[in-house]
Amino acid sequence: MFAPRTWVVGEVVSAAIMNQEIRDQLNTLLAAWTPYTPTWTASTNPNIGNGTLTGRYMKIGRTVIVHINLTAGSTTTFGSGSYNWSLPFAAANAGASLVGTVQILASSRWAGQVVISPNATTFSIFAPISSANPRNIDFVTGTAPETLASTHQIRITFVYESAT
Image (cartoon, rainbow, N blue to C red; front, side, top):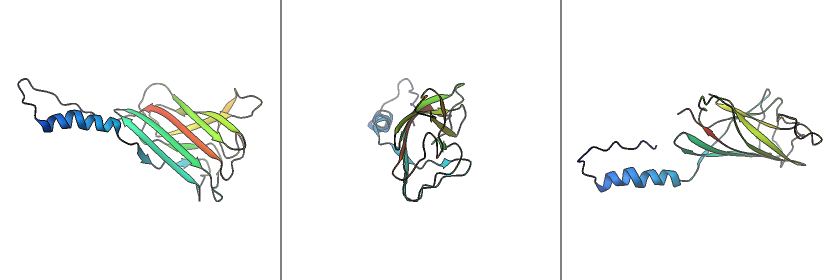
């Protein structure tokens, strides 16, 4: 994807070459997002049961835009410990952690953050640990920032640089 051709002086440009180098590259930029199934883990792994867990991404060069949506069902179990999610591609060694956004829709709506470390294949999400002090954030678990239940949602969106 996005490996431009090296042109040679005096080369005759054909319609096939123009299609490959211009049309096909633009179509890739304008293409539909690619679905992927993120892996959701914790110290004791949660299980989506009859809920839904979907992911999709758009990769342009090494820039990856990701959206994940989890909707808990009546048989979803939430495990224990802090939640981690798989990335569609390993993160680059960018020398800094990257941050994205999280919305937890439960009894209350919680705004949180995504943290992706350099070279990571997974990421963690953080949210306020209480409504009394929204500046104090910690890992999201099945019981923090509140106890998750059927119909609750976690929506995650972020952009990061992939290693390849």
